[in-house]
Image 1 (tube, rainbow, N blue to C red):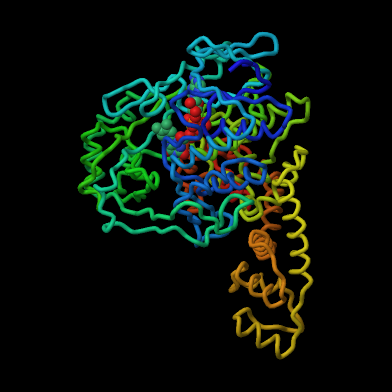
Image 2 (image 1 turned 60 degrees about the horizontal axis):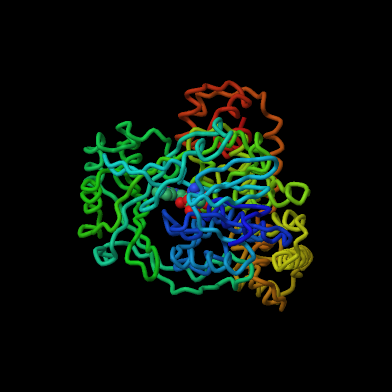
Length: 617
Ligand SMILES: Cc1cc2nc3c(=O)[nH]c(=O)nc-3n(C[C@H](O)[C@H](O)[C@H](O)COP(=O)(O)OP(=O)(O)OC[C@H]3O[C@@H](n4cnc5c(N)ncnc54)[C@H](O)[C@@H]3O)c2cc1C
């Protein structure tokens, strides 16, 4: 390794780091490097081995349409594909892929190693800035320098792990932590906060009785993430996940041991994720609920352990074993790795701008879990924004800001940089005001203009522009193709169950009839007319036309919402309303807002609650 001077360095090779480097290297003139701890593989998954999920699947598709890597990696290592919320509206349906976590990492290693990104496997101990260049000093005293630095160090900064009374220094299991935020960096002390997250025990395959659980096979109908893959692309062998549940006995053991839980006895100071709670959180917060889902998920095809999703814990080892063995199918469970919680330093994102750049130190960007978020997809989304903007800034070009009206990544960056947060941030659909627009099927329509602004012109851009052209043509066909009232047409539509004809009826009107599934209906009607359309385009058009009226109304509601700030409201009535979440009611009761503007300012009130109230006062 001779020249250790780069234009742009990404510190950390996790999900945020890989995505940041991947987009930055697409600007071919840039010299890009990832500097990362030697014993941690690229894009490794220390928690649940899955990519996507509600709100997060949308982020993965947004990244894919923007030229990101995550969708490709997930498809190529996917061992179970599912569409979540399939029985609900398309706006809240999301793709989730169970991954083989070793394969996922090795695909990331492959893509990064085959690109012109340099990977320097060293642990960085100190970062400083002299003039307009950053110097990174590794633990073997190597000095590496760059103009733009993106920090994506995950849970490693001053990481401290807890299992019952046992406290160890580390960023994740079997990995040393890194320096704390303010010892690693000069001049960032006002940035620091402290959060925590946790993970469940890993169970050995042969100790689980799967016959006692509900099997969840891979769904052949789930559309793969990456635009370049066939819609039913499956590279790895497909396997099942399993569902079981906690019970009275499980929760009784957890409650009996409250004093030994580091989260509740004061041993852990950091604040944990509300939306990815530990089983202790669930037990102590919801005293009247003892049944909680536990999804038992494979960590990989050749990996002997399963991940029991839903029972993340930092209780002492013997308590973990006791409560796990009360769960159906896990009576003989053997633990390969015990659950733990990790506390770590995070930056206060109020000091970052929408490009993820720290306002006090130009050229220094942060992304991922170090920004107080939780989740691989959230990390990857921020990594992309930091990476693309660091590259654009280096090249003296305008920055790329995604609008919150048009993307979940935009919603997240806006939330992170505009709100004072006291807990880890996770994306879900209720964070978006106009979620009817932020669907998976129309991602290319939302993202293509942002991607084309980069003027990189590769296969992503060709796919995006072909998609948009095909989509617009199809919308014209849907609106302008009519079935006239003839005996033949009346019989045909009636046999298909698509309804009758009075005078004439367009494909659009048929799709909008309540009994008709838009995708299936459009597929059949296009077959009849002999038109062949790519499945992804067909879905986007079918759903957009079916819900055109709702989408227009939702846009109008959004505009109305902007005007409603001074309208009085009764906070007492809001507490009785079943459309408002328990969490929001807690916050409303505390502040007692008297008008919409006050409600809006309450920390943590969900945009969906605001949109609902706006539509009803
Ligand atoms: C115990 C645990 C539990 C979790 N639980 C959940 C959960 O319940 N739900 C959820 O959605 N997510 C969870 N996660 C979070 C998930 O792992 C992260 O959101 C995701 O990995 C964050 O990606 P990242 O790129 O920000 O950081 P990471 O994936 O952690 O990557 C950080 C990278 O920084 C590198 N690095 C750190 N310090 C240095 C240094 N000094 N020098 C060089 N390189 C350095 C590391 O090598 C690593 O490559 C959990 C993580 C852990 C560890």
